[in-house]
Amino acid sequence: MSSRKKSSQKKGALTRAKERRKKERERLKYILKILSVILLLSSVILAFGFFTSKDKNSSDDNISSKHLEKNISVKTEVPEEYPKDEDEHFNLLSILTNWGKKTKSTRCIIKKSNSPRLVIIIDDVSNIRQIKAIENIPYHLTPSIFPPSELSMHSNTLARGRKHFMVHLPMQSGSKQFNKMYKTLFVTDSKKKMEKRIKEIRRLFPNDIFINNHTGSVFTSNYQAMKSLYGYMRKEGFIFVDSRTTAKSKVKKIVAEYKDLYIARDIFLDNKQNVPYILSQLKRAVKIAKHRGYAIAIGHPHRATLRALHQAKSILKDVQVVYIDELVKRISSD
Image (spheres, one colour):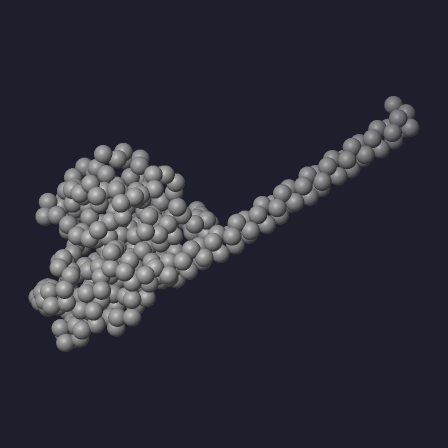
């Protein structure tokens, strides 16, 4: 082969190599442009979601005190109309913050203390006015916040920046009226639907540890349904607190099978919404705490309940009123 032909082939190879490198650089530039656009769009979406939820929260501030007294609880009224759509309501920021994180199954223990402790959970929290009313009471009260519902489709934002709270999960009761609440869990729901709901709660409340049931007498007394749900909650790192809305609850049995600690309500404070009755229930709760070392009471953000708690200094002087996470410590079981 002549030297001229060899030289020509060599130049051709160099030219092709340069073209390949040029194409690779162009491809890299294109990919970088695409990534830049995606990053910009993500920033815009996050900003939009933040300001939208902020505006919605502001509207919750304007709820009247009359509405405050009509919160859903075991014996209170509920709205008559409910949205029928099944869209999931969770904020993008929560998803991105916890993207790729793995949760572990959890067990828990009661923290040791030299003095009796009382946990007071305030159920049915759905707006910032209730949160402020609870925080205005000079004790460590634990708000249990409804997931997004007809009361507030952005109630999950109430948990942002808060360390001490829990989630109040609607579950099937014996009342058709209560069972109309948005995304109530039913014993007839498939395992897939239960798992999806608990994963949604984790996205909505990425930093939550504790869940207790809203109503739920039918659900918690159904062994198979409750065992499935408990397994999904445990897998997502939640600790379940049995509100004990029925004496037939199977939660204690299920928890024992997992060799976990059973945590349950001892006293309902405000089945009757008058101050003397609520104060008498607080005395009962204190008596239990002194006997066992701790007790768990559940109330609601009713005006009478809040007034009674403001007047309870002499009753609560011999116990520590603590947040639920100050009583219960989570430990990994894996």
